[in-house]
Amino acid sequence: MRIDIHTHLITPGAVPSAAELARAARLAQHFHIRRVVLLGNITATGGRNPSPEDIVAINDHTLAAMAARPELYIGFCYLNPAHSPAFIQEEIDRCIVAGGMKGIKLWISVKATDPRLDLIMERARELNVPVLHHSWYQVTPVDHNGSTPDEIAHLARRHPGTTVIMAHLGGVRERGIRDIEELPNVYVDTSGSQPEAGMVEYAVRRIGAGRIIFGSDWPLRDFGVQLGRIVGADLTAEENRKIFYDNAAKVLKLEE
Amino acid sequence: MEKCSEGRQAAYKLIDTSVFCGPWPFRSLRPRTLPELKEYLAGHGVCRAWVTSTEAVLLPDPMTANEPLLVEAAKDPFWVPVTLLDPSLPGWEDDYRRSLAMGARAVKLTPNYHQYSLSSPAVDRLAGLLTADRLPFCIQMRMMDERAHHPLMKVPGVPAAEVAELALRHPELSVVACAVYNAELRFLQKAPNVVAEISYVESVETLLQAKSVLGVERLLFGSHSPFLYMAAVQAKLDAHPDMINEVELRAVCYENAGRLIPDGR
Image (tube, rainbow over all chains, first blue to last red; front, side, top):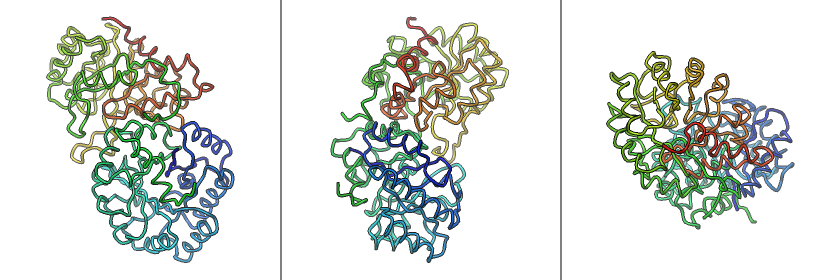
């Protein structure tokens, strides 16, 4: 039994592509992935600094996918912290309180150190939902306002009562794990880059399997390849179960 | 042991066309010796592996690392020894001849680490030798994701278009692009004598996508072990039978590689 905490849809359009939804469902079933967290069609709409209209369109798209495949999709509310507090509050209420989404996704619009995130983090704490934030350490130029793991750590320290999922173990690597090691409110998802051998075992040694969650970044990546970095890692059955299911079920408050 | 899926790929033997052996200063690689590496690969269904020294990428004279590997690999038919040459070095032709005499069955280049272009005259001369000797010419596009390099040693990937141009200048040569990205496959399309090793190729359904760009006859299984999890690379072979049939899967798993370097020494 598996939960994938990090997926997208990428086909352009106001509503989800039926073909893409069907493909996701077929492949998820093939790889024994029972539930899939949808973080929005963020590469198809709005670019790096989406407008409020883009945000509404992306979240409408996610809500439509959830309605089309309720047995598969769990939606996260995509936000741009640069927008007005009133709009952000409205969108959280619309998507999470009324719409049934189970978390918040932040990408590269604004750095994690920006105080404009504080409103979002506080509301996430009140609603008891996680915030999944893009993160990467890279020696090539950083895309827009991409956040590094030490900036994610800064965010998590400011909001110790909010659950943070730092995306992309394959991008944050050893240094990123060290950054969040002492912060129990931070999880890391396993997506990002090539399935580099030893990285999952390193994360398990440093922060424990209880803070690592399987994520694929599908369809930018291949479900099978991304599963393979956990299947191929030298882990116990219990560690596998935590990474593939238990930890995600806990942060998503799934009662299944 | 947990599996990615109940996929068909486990039913096939594999020829792994790109593995490395030895230390690498930027990662703690395991396994590190040829016997350990063989045990690991064979445990994943690999029956033959094309092996290159990691140290040959970084040492001032790659032969310092090639020679011990060639000597040891020659003792076991599991290995297909691949010598890594630097054609910018004086005397590289001697390195080529010595490598072949020691059992090398292919040549690999890392032009980005050795700082020369694939359009340099020495590369063309080497391509001519390989064509005459009917040996594959492997171009290592990258060793790691460029984003994760050491900040004081940023090495760009090899331009895929230059691989295609090299192959077009030498139409009788077999060129293998190792660790090529999915987005780079299209640059290889125009050169029919280039095949792609799939360790770094990844998309929604990797093998199906790669087939649509190059065709299965131009794809080789390669794991880039021990840098990557073998289970993750093997999962790329787990395509739906309606999309990749048995004949096509066998081609990628071992038949294409077997044609490039037949069994026997």
